[in-house]
Image (cartoon, rainbow, N blue to C red):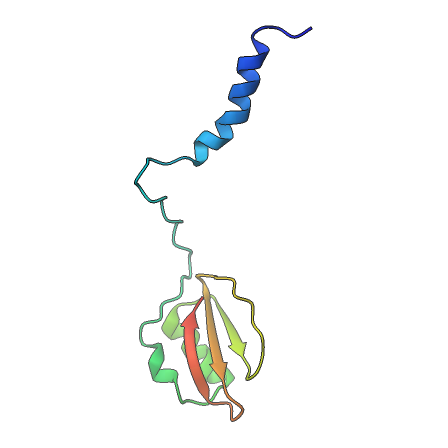
Length: 103
């Protein structure tokens, strides 16, 4: 037989995790903390038109402050997941960089 106190305790136990996710109405949720090694797009346009190489990749990583570099070969599919610490660099069939963007 259950105690009369069990129902409120069980209800509270089920609702407590949901309350932790709530935020004030009209207020956006707090942004996640910045990842260490977060990428920055500032100044990456200077690499457009350069040849894709390991040296250029190292310079791109240094300029963007990204933790990882993902090369995007021509006509290839890439995942659309966003990673704030990643730099994605696409190039064409002549190994010329066509875009460099964080994410």
